Image 1 (cartoon, rainbow, N blue to C red):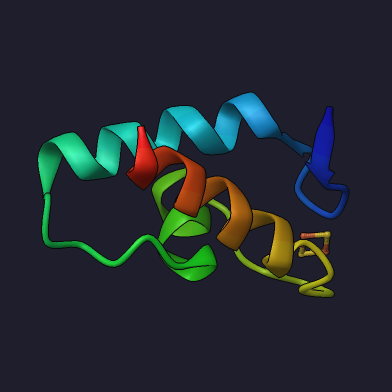
Image 2: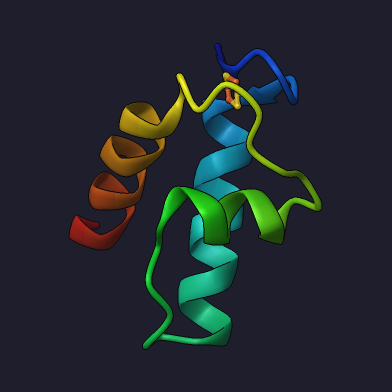
Length: 62
Ligand code: FES
């Protein structure tokens, strides 16, 4: 499911980026900005930020 329509990023893309960030740098904050940067993207409308936060939380709970 597409979460960020500005950058065409899916929930699975975000989970993969979050897991990669956590594995590489466990102390890195999983913010929407960090996750977007991990995928080589930048925020535009920021309408997806709450979903990024939710998916990041779910990734950390795993
Ligand atoms: S929907 Fe993600 S920046 Fe616009």
